[in-house]
Image (tube, one colour):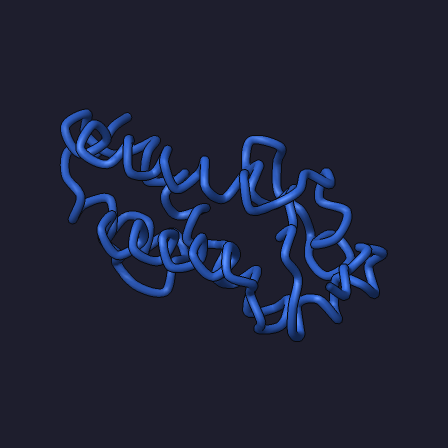
Length: 136
């Protein structure tokens, strides 16, 4: 069943446990911010990283509920961000993040990747999980 508008989807996801009734625009902006940080070198710790990564989960859940017009309006932007995220990360089947968090189902592919360029606290945490961190 599709919910007809963005406000209804935000409210429904809030009732399902998200901390507020987010909009698609807010979560696309959050995803864009995270992608840019990963490209530059995400410096915060693994808990903040996985918290930030959850904005992509929200978009995934919302896409299953949103009306076609809203999905069409945002799909190209999300796809472009997904492409950038894939380019800035390495596939590891969730091994690195799995040291710290339960990895969700395979359709949530962004949990099965880690940044190529590791710096700061995230580099320290993921090196403990066996990720080789470049020193160059």
